[in-house]
Image (cartoon, rainbow, N blue to C red; front, side):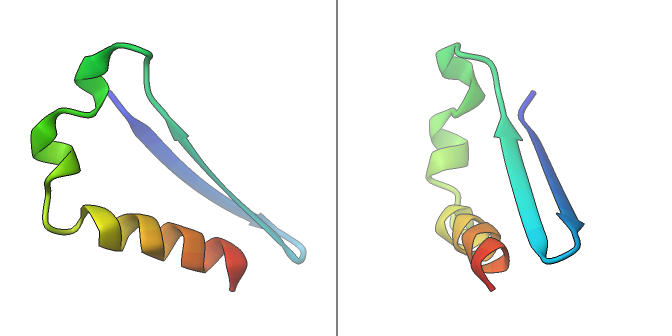
Length: 49
């Protein structure tokens, strides 16, 4: 199963997305999910804010 974790320390922030290498970690239902782009934009936005 995929795992997302976030952390902050001082002025730094980090995020990690982990999954195995098999193709089932990102089935079409996940990649075509209406909020897929929004979640990644939110993660990158939080990291760069």
